[in-house]
Image 1 (cartoon, rainbow, N blue to C red):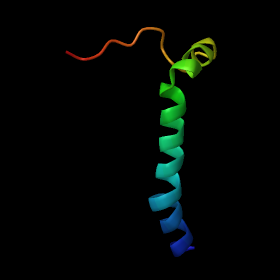
Image 2 (image 1 turned 180 degrees about the horizontal axis):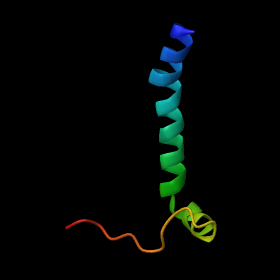
Image 3 (image 1 turned 180 degrees about the vertical axis):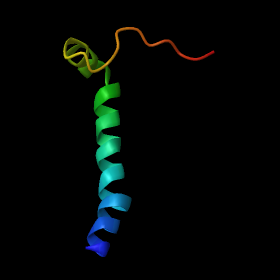
Image 4 (image 1 turned 90 degrees about the horizontal axis):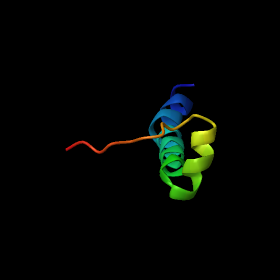
Length: 47
């Protein structure tokens, strides 16, 4: 139990988060995600 939870926390979860982050930031996926209302329509960079 302890080893499994450690492996999940340190290895598998960061990989899943990275894949989701890549998916959300690809240009061709943006229109689909906007239609699903996952991503906001206007994102302004911080200056």
